[in-house]
Image (cartoon, rainbow, N blue to C red):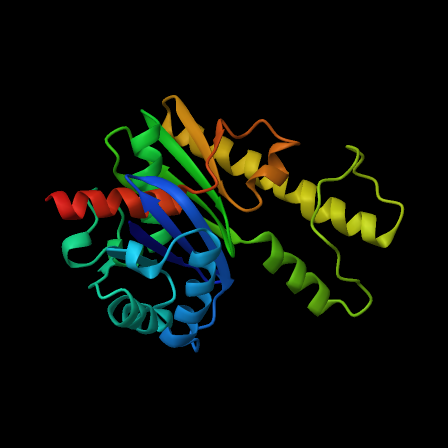
Length: 259
């Protein structure tokens, strides 16, 4: 089985894949100081709860946008699973598609992995919207090449900035409003409207401008934990794929070992 590790700025996702199918997944807060031994203890318990053991893992692939986290994950693979991990975007796991941008070396692994997975599922031109620490919009052409995109603050970052900069504003939970009114009558309601409907407007506005610039039919694919939250109040998404990055890791592994 393949252990795919997606190391993001906020969370690390570990997933077990068999023939490309996700059998189990676990999430832990990203902390570059966490050691391989700590990961191993945590994973050992979770594997057992799902009916697996570390002996079931015979391959590891890592995709990371947190360089400081990489070393301990590599040690985890070697010390506890006795395999040399593939690193997404490097060596045998180099990107199989064109990165048609001015700074291809700076394209985040998560975004490249999303491109691989989305292109494998949907034909034609794509816009991928990923709701993570940042909210990213990525354009993929019909050939599977990455053409560029947009980086915007993630919704939780926006809330943190608002609360930290304004002493009188409370911290609020992110949730879909129970109606479509955009006139708030309490402070918390006004904040929710500003954050939620502001993000809906950003999603629709930026996706619309991207479609106009591409000039061909486009499929919009959303991923990330908050995609379903916004889907209730916008028709901007054609599809939601919550595991796009992990699926990209699985496909990249298949490509790497078969080439």
